[in-house]
Length: 323
Image (tube, one colour):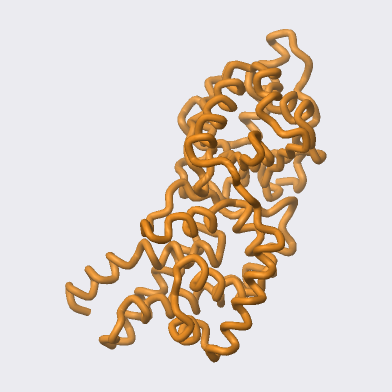
């Protein structure tokens, strides 16, 4: 491979990663798919007419193969499964900014999980990245007519369950800032008024970190759960770092040593927070930074709460699977 070929690949790497991540919902698997794409391209020794189309085809096919096996593992996953959090999308295209942002949200990625691997790949290439059908057909190894049918089915499934984020970016950022201010201040009432009546908080611990022991729904219940954790977490030196997560307002929670405890993303609609999703599974956080032992953090927070004369933390978490 020539130096120019390597430069071209590096220029296309953000696009290839973004395609793979949306198909796979995993940062680590997407990075592996991009690396495998380079190895196959290097071994082929060809000079395609369109390097972009050629590499997009390879990364799509690799991702489809990986997803087919990953789906089996996800069916046996302990507790709710969420995509690995992505703090920033490396690919930017001003003409597709709305589609790129919408397709990156946790809600959209979870909806994509309902599609078959082929439907998911076709939807991502067509609806998110605006590939034409001849390119899509080449990428997935199906006829153009078959790809059009796959696109229609995928779009129908996505439209039926697609979340509608009716707040613009400025409104979302303002509400999120007030949310995390109230959380850090331990102000349960200020937090409650920012939550929709049917708000839900859900955690993905994968059996390897604390998970909520029951479904927590409703503004009052969710606010109490969050505030019960906020004070003790701050007392033991924990910090809340507001950060965009999967294109939505969120935060990275760190222990006193700066290690990642979890990420949290807020889904905002109708003037309030609709869903709060926390990724706590340490296996899904390694790309964010060094990972803390969430169980140790929880135990220390509980001791701090008791030392301050408070009640023990409510049964919000449980060890789903023993170590």
